[in-house]
Length: 181
Image (cartoon, rainbow, N blue to C red; front, side):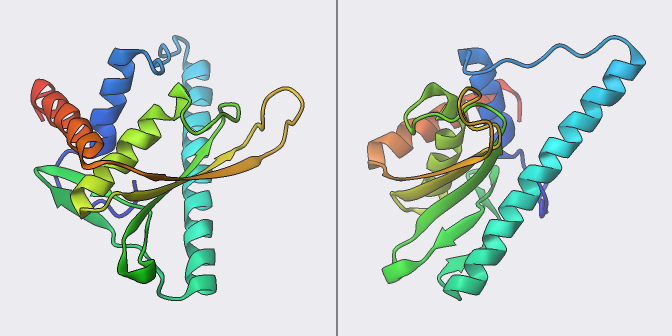
């Protein structure tokens, strides 16, 4: 999470706990022996670096191609929680949140449970920036893990209702309180 400037809890920390509790994904057990710990740490670091490189490459490409249309606003604090959007599309003076992800899970559809953490994050950004419009951009590094074993890129545009955003934010705030953050 480059660019973090505040000491407020980040929305991704809260969403991670929600997704663990709800079974959307699991935290992997910490390896026992030192060699396995070192390898696991290196894999995690490499994945984070590749995700960051992907995000920055897309941001840079969009800045060069579209000029001032896409804006990187950095960290925003809303209601006591830090949020860091990747890009905000300002076309036609309407804000559309753009979230960029790089994942090793197999390619999936936009409403798949695998994407719930991403959509929760996007909805939180929409709530904070008072827009209903979003786009989730995901590269699936391993393709579908069956027939296509190379990267597949997908983008989904989604417009939320005010109710969806309010319910998502209420869940995040409830977890923030229960986590003591």
